[in-house]
Image (cartoon, rainbow over all chains, first blue to last red; front, side):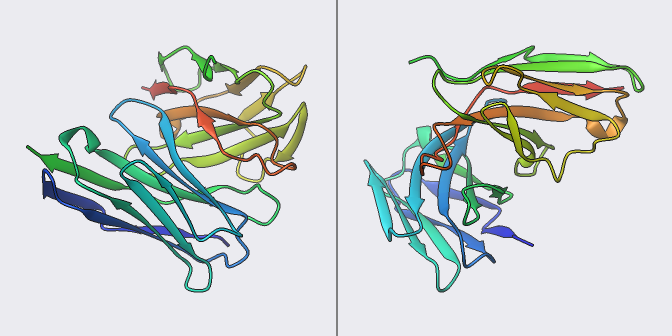
Length: 112
Length: 116
């Protein structure tokens, strides 16, 4: 059974700090891994999608990496801003591009 | 490009009543997903459609939940009868075509259901 965990559950950092969010998964045959942010009371916004053949993806201040052998993905946020405060979730899908399993999320607070 | 639309945004019902949620995916997206998100947890996949066919409904409580996507476009999710533990946010998402590798998901705003 696929399982996804995220550490830490919550994180509070001062503005300007670089930070790393962690995502671990048990399915070595993943199809892709996607990172999302969720603001309170809102739906999920896609941040980055990494296909299983890729090692990393970058968008602006965000960089996500994927290591299938260790079952880990990391989301790196550079120069954090108060507007980055949200819950960040990762989700992986199996080899058929289905059976999406989400982690519980990391709640990030960036203090001005 | 319009995003995924969902309605209603909020719903309060009493236990044993029925409720229905509606979702309209992004135009041209073949795959549609319904998720249940309980407070403090990540979303849990309930059902996944490819066009108007069901791909995966292994986690759908079929004794009370049903979903359809008759014309391969919009979809409805129904709960009948509702239980207290069904209180959650119901999220709809769509993706271009999982088979073709376009499985990046786009989410709607969700419907917050409260069962009293």
